[in-house]
Amino acid sequence: MALMDFIKKQFIDILEWVEEGDGTLAWRFPVADREIQYGGSLTVRESQMAVFVNEGKVADVFGPGRYTLTTQTLPVLTYLQNWDKLFKSPFKSDVYFFSTRQQVDQRWGTTQPVTIRDKDFGAVRLRAFGNYSYRVADPKLFHTEISGTRERYTVAELDGQLRALMLQHISDAVASSGVPFLDLAANQVEFAEQLKNVTAPAFEKLGLKLEGVTVQNVSLPEELQKILDQKIGMGMVGGDMGKFMQYQTAQAIPKFAEGAAAGGGGSGIAGDAMGLGAGVALGQVLAQNLAQGLQGGNAVPPAQAAAAAASVGVKPEDVMATLEKLGDLKAKGILTQEEFDAKKAELLKKLV
Image (tube, rainbow, N blue to C red; front, top):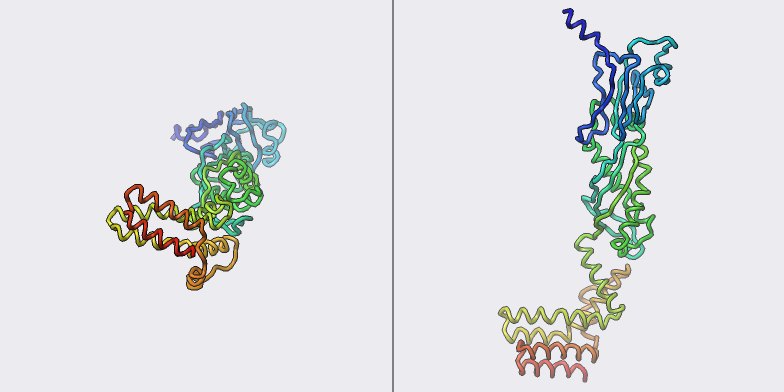
């Protein structure tokens, strides 16, 4: 019994926290039923801060250094406790330590595409991901807003909320940067800086400082990427639809040849080649549809497109480009002389 009484009367004379590298942001010193010794020592290491809390109210805040706990170093607590100048007794207070070092390599990313407004495409759904880093800057605010009276509060527990804040401000960052979507990939540093600027105030409201943001990738959903690839292809030929269709036809011929070599037979490649002339005309109408769709216009219905294709003549340069490709196939032995001559005659008739 005497031993228990002795233990109960033990006082705390050294307050300190040695971080264990487990991602702890806030840690409550284990006071329990013991009292803090007046004149005791408080050690706050670099990258730490300490806060004294009296009956739920934040009192004194300490930065890095070594302090002797007296009425002079605890002015707010002295006021709250109504201590007089001669006070020297042990006292009760909750003490919380906070880690203020940078929490690096925190990941953010879009689980679902985020819709943004783009001056080239209008509404665009994009995906993006990267890293960010932050630190506890205002332990008093962080205590009242986030960690509270819990014994320990970790980085992992805060991760979901901070990730949501990053994603919430992506649209604002794109708008603030003024960078079109097509240029975002080449301006990821500028995009990251804007994302940091528009998100930082939300971190500050939690007592945190957003130190840095990186953007590692920006991309479109697959279906929109295909449309973008078509637009890029059109840009490569300067918007000339005739040249664009020549490019498309040239890309299609090797695929026809591969199909024939895989078992389609000579008649298959000849039949595919004979359809190229009409395909060019129909392709021009479909390409116009694509261009109108990218610019927000009304597309031509498929039936109307087919009818329009029938009335579109084949340009001489399209025929010559097709004949050159067919000549290459004949030289490689993919087409026979008879097949080449038949297709040549068919194409020349379209010029009459």
